[in-house]
Length: 521
Image 1: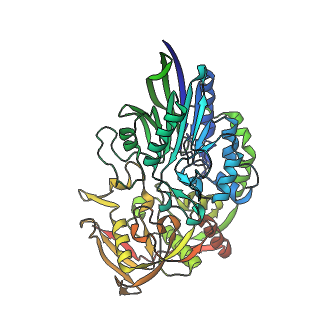
Image 2: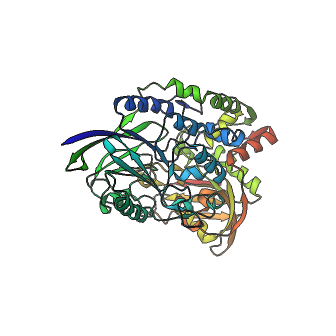
Image 3: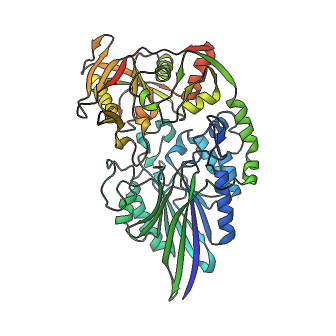
């Protein structure tokens, strides 16, 4: 019997991070594709039978990628330049690949020396919209490794409809099952890899659901119900996972380039047939790894231009618009959230708005504001929509936000459904233009104890025009009451640009708090 070792390396949810820095303050950080590049080069030097795959959410997420798209999109995408240089074998479409629109995505795909895979995203002809559902890689001794790419089909619940116009998102589980059978029958691969931009909907050991079974994540079901998968690469949830589910090796390598997934496979030949005889899944974190200098040099010009842009002064704040404690900022009206809602209402010309603090590292605006402050506080390339909702929709949305909190021994904590398995602080909204109170000592679903509009109770059968980001307007974050509501106005500019323009026009902005809402217990 002959045995061959094969190394599979996976990046996922890199989100535009190349340099090991935090763009909010330029301090060093243990992340980035340049550090991962060192791992890739080392692993390749050890084993010529190495396959490197990116599992999606690559080209969006940092000021580097935003500024490239905004100001230098005619040049090669820096993320693609680096993956080309590292000789990636394939990449999978992630949900955030659509954030900058189809033109940017197609340009990135066309610039790539490797194929992009997604079997379940179809064009108007019913074909994979990027042409490649899977890839066959030839390894030593004629070993054929098949790589099938699938993407969470939940994207229409989040993405700007204009960015996915003409596309159909087939069920990821059903597509995986269909293509697995087709590839096994027609190509007879020795190794079957599924790279799925999606995560796990259940506890990996017990199988108990860990989230509402919306179909956004189907990794557990894929491992349990689809036969013949030798390896499942996952992502989307930003988790750090390495193990086996139903005997199938799985990895999920965190996010922002903090780790790379590695699976060492032993293939043994017996009677002219290769089979996987052993699999060791693991994660390699980059904390102690030096960034690859040639990778940094490759994109140095992009970074220099980005840093110049980030340091441009754009205005001043009168008063305090900083965030010291994100939990406290979600319990009582604060100046930063009120300001963002004011910008949204000013641009949309409506009197009701909602927004969120996207994470727990948001610091707010200092006295002198630069573009760095804007993009580090508003990190997503969201656009705005004005939708028409009923008073009942408004009440249900407030109850959804009120479920963010729990009270334990008199202290307020965050409901684990907003933190596990993936932090979702961005799904707690705060509103301007209405007055409301949450009493979180009451049961979930019964916590809105007061909500008024212009001094009068909100009429449950009344109609209200509300501005919010495109993610929320599509029902993202389990705000299903907003889904498919009439769109009164679509504002296509990114919010970070809208915020910057608002400040530039005024020069000085004032930190105000009208205390239109609060949380009690």
